Image (cartoon, rainbow, N blue to C red; front, side, top):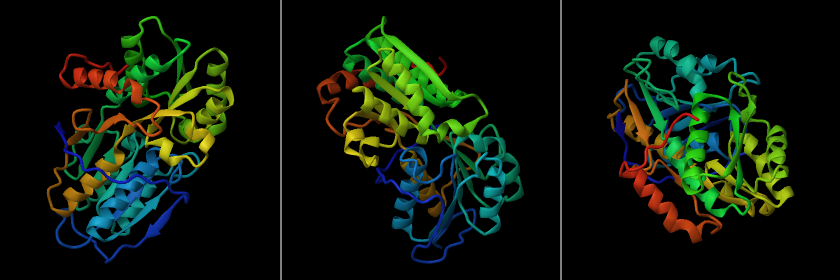
Length: 346
């Protein structure tokens, strides 16, 4: 696996559920990229546009690439039970979009069959391995979520006044368990005796937990009532409920994927977001499109975005972790140097 060098892309939050936006020109480049402006297809994860987290980070990268290279894009969202993921990818390929990016590990269950049907189209999938599929026209965009979450755990343990914190996961799955494992390890590195409540909104296979703010609120509310003063969520759109619970309880929260201090509209919620674990999906999407345009896509491989490549990290918007930044930086360097090996399972 190779580690990509990243280019910073702007982050944004959008409200529509699907769109078909045109850039300056009509691409249709082949699988080798080239001088023609691209026509890019994006298939969202559960929740679609406007989740102010994972999906919107992908949009930010897509829009940055279109601004740089021209072209046009179309994005599609899955239906209520997300049973049409393969149909979304097929629709984009049939309409001539190339490259096509699948946002989320759940597409890993169907993308192998789709890429086989469209060998002249380049695909990328976020959070699922292309090496496991073995198709030359598929690239995996992976992240060391456990490393960024370790730093979130360090921050939570250093800032907690009760030595009691929490973690809310969207869907119980190996991917989200990486967030949990890193967070717990980071908090315990600071305070081995710290109490850490952990709960998932929905079980494995039920992706509704990524788009259920009301349920996120209830789960986090229980943690605050039990004595936690800081809760970290890895729950997509459900994180809004965690922020609402924090505001009601006078606690604090840690966001995920995007800098959620910047993506929420309500100042009362901004006030409780201590930091966010940045997962630079925007960088990964824009870098993949860059490689498509210049003809350097290496299909059949995975690109890993970790702490060393600045693919994960912590935001400092709002200034709430400024006083502990030196300690966070020290733990970060220990991970990069290999002195700390962060677990990927709880």
